[in-house]
Image (cartoon, rainbow, N blue to C red):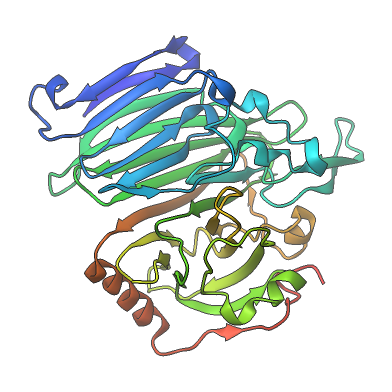
Length: 397
């Protein structure tokens, strides 16, 4: 394995620019692939570190400055991600989560895949935790937590091979969330893609570095716009049970799996899902276009990420036409509600919580049909139970 360290705070290493391709590894890994690390300048991007990975077919950008999230990608010329009403990726120094009623996180929100967590991953709320004297104290939790706005303290690039000899482009990173008297958690991520492949795999490990038990949670906000999101696009997944989040979502429950064209002023709708799995706990969700010849797929293990949220936000194109496919440890409700339902994991000292996700892109009708067949096999002829109203186990009533 060849490895290059780009950031290591412990060793005082920070590489401003880096470029790696076939010409720089002595012919060991031929092909039109490339990995580039650079720093962005201008506007809200000022000072943001990015790592651009191109496997020869699929390209995407990793943002160490923003919790190792995945920025926009491209596959055979098809954009993967969405167009947010801001010019990013945004330096976290310009994101104040306290503003706009605790919704300030949105100021930096424009990634393809952004993690929500690790202390909380839902909407703003007030939680009760022990203070530094052990007494109950109120703390404010803001939208979707902090991890997406924390720079990585360790980043490396490596070239590896799969068991069958396929070269893998690998980027690894570590991000810490914690401070004195509060939870202390570390995210270690491995992001890998094969040469000429149509997928990228993310393997995350969250460790409780504190010497007492502590809570941790994760939600993967996986966001897609055009060309996969379009008039008549379909959400395809092995849903066993579906329920609207709230009264607004009830209005669209009969068409929860279908998307309209960009609709200026549309008010978001969100649906909670329980997915069928195979014998190993694996499941998936797909967004395909109306013609069923282009699709994006998210795969994960329900044993690791048991909850799934579908976010529909088909607003006008300039407003941020997008949908979110969101596996998580819990639903993105207020943390107090999710804790009461037993869905917030507690980690013992040095215990690790793991999540593995694979993101695929398909640009042929045959590829889309194959995924639809997978979904049908997981459902085994069963129709989902679709609730017309929010249900108590998933939504505060």
